[in-house]
Length: 92
Image (cartoon, rainbow, N blue to C red; front, side, top):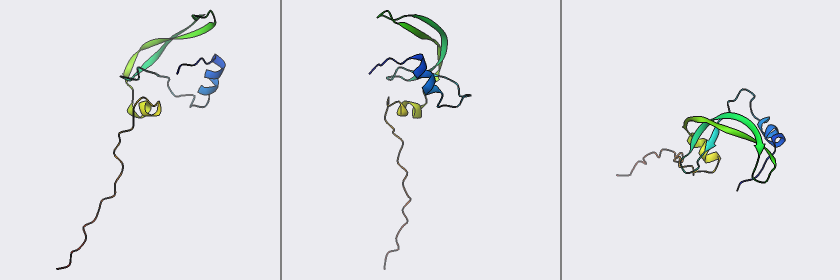
């Protein structure tokens, strides 16, 4: 469900991450890709409110599966870890 966030809210959210981490855009939940961020510009949205627009800087690669799982765009299909069973001795 889309929701608006302000520049202030975005900055606060980003401050919880490593300052040296790179930014990628996760796009297209049905066929997930990672994109580079592009140019920032200010304009008006459809309701006439001031908005900051972040352009798409181009495709980087497929979105890593753990990221798609964290975004709830796909399910985790990793096989569960199982313990190896040992053979029991049989009486003769």
